[in-house]
Image 1 (cartoon, one colour):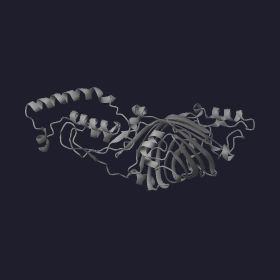
Image 2: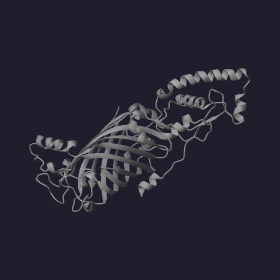
Image 3: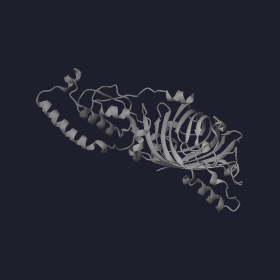
Image 4: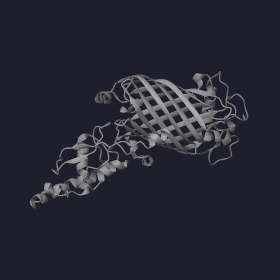
Length: 427
């Protein structure tokens, strides 16, 4: 229910009326977002046309002046005397003066820049963030003294403005309000085992061995004005022996004398395609100075997971507004925006997930040759997850520590818990 509420949540557009531009053609109402306005302005994609059109416009104004053409009168009578390229140039000049770079992957940005109609009824702009981040996430149940089910996961994320040109970025869901876009790539490997790895053979009724590896491309649209965030991601990779989950776990166990070598990986879920699409929303429903409450929802569709999730999060402590940025920024940007350079806060999360398909339990969608998987009627269709943790952030570096608990994912399964650690660097 939370997912559909956020999915159909629409926000009013923001418009800022700019004063008369240098061309002298009346007032022009320009919708602009000031969220994360980056220094400088890049127009590489349209720079050649821009230079030619500026020269052409100057020549045309001189000719019109000689012929006695009254541009102000033409504007009042409804004919602006400017073609679509001239309108584009004036808009670009305004954005350049504001230090704003529009994201031309977004339909609302292209509508504003390239529309031939000189009308105030344009949608809000979506800008491109110039911030870059490197994030490493690590999950393991070793700190909870267990070695079962979801036993290990590692994720590397890179966010950079140059990733806007990634062709997969055009497959991301558009955003129809104002905001700032962040583009990124992720590399993920997760591993799953039965309740024990000390017994060989197939443990019927237990979780099968499984591992997957995929590369993801994602876009985050952050809308501080409406306390809203949209994230879309497409993942492609492999589940099965070629994901090297078995090699990673065996190498880790063999490097520690007190650990037993895991038995049973030869019966893991076999190689199959991973192709998934994810869409998530986050909405702030209470935003105080030292605490806030957020609703979240997500949907996955593909060969790895098909599910719908809804949840909430509570944060309290010495913190910045959740939607001010992605949680961490460089010191200079924090100074410029008036945000706290140090954060230390406590958070609690809870969610429920409706499960349609899980390849780590049921096997790949196309390859049915796995030695052992769980049938669909043994899968828990409703799964609950809760967590609590702390975040420490200072001058562009952030550390998250989180204890996570998950309800049984299959019949006769157990509750499971693991520790999540995340380290983020603002580059």
